[in-house]
Image (cartoon, rainbow, N blue to C red):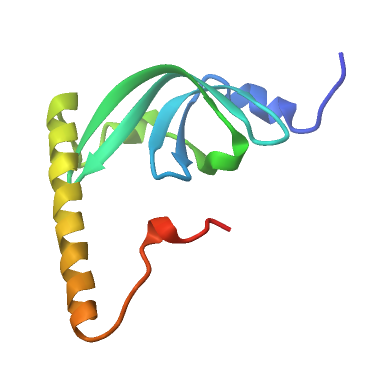
Amino acid sequence: MNYMPGTASLIQDIDKKHLVLLRDGRTLIGFLRSIDQFANLVLHQTVERIHVGKKYGDIPRGIFVVRGENVVLLGEIDLEKESDTLLQQVSIEEILEEQRVELQAKQESEKLKVQALKERGLVVPRADTLDEY
């Protein structure tokens, strides 16, 4: 069996919960089962956590494969401290509704900003029209 540097520490982390922040803003929590040199991840018993204010909801996702290019942050979760959080867990339906309301409010606010800038003769390009690179 070939020894790869860093595999000993990975084996120790295999049965710990990890939090993964993706480039699109989603947050995944699950057990890290595999990682490679490109930071491709395989998570087991994964949930997608949605935060709105002081509330959160978890959507079960099962086994989740994440390409390394989408990983922004990967960190271990201390299960003892996780239960001490001040956040309130709510149902999936409730958190999705609150997320929808928050997104609507954000879009309305953005429309008002764009309108105010337009009235002053300034035009700001929309984010979806800009190139990623």
